[in-house]
Image 1 (cartoon, rainbow, N blue to C red):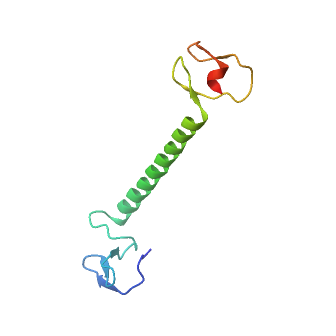
Image 2 (cartoon, helix red, strand yellow):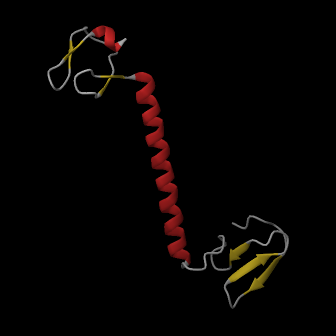
Image 3 (cartoon, rainbow, N blue to C red):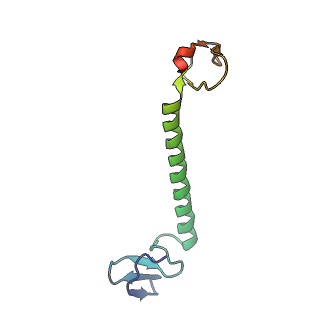
Length: 104
């Protein structure tokens, strides 16, 4: 996992190496960037959680873009609605009729 392939200066008493070229610190035990206040397991768990959070945010962003592009808001309740087949008689969950012209 070493990002830099330059010579590393080792500091075993501190459990990290420092790259002579870029100054980056690397954990001796797991090879990740230096994580001074966390164990290797804690660091790995935090990184995994952050990656999952970023993936969720991306998915939510893509969903929001889809809703804006492909749906119309119900004039009765404001819920996103999409008509793709069927008759033009549409009623929302609140029993508000929706004109087919609103959906196109």
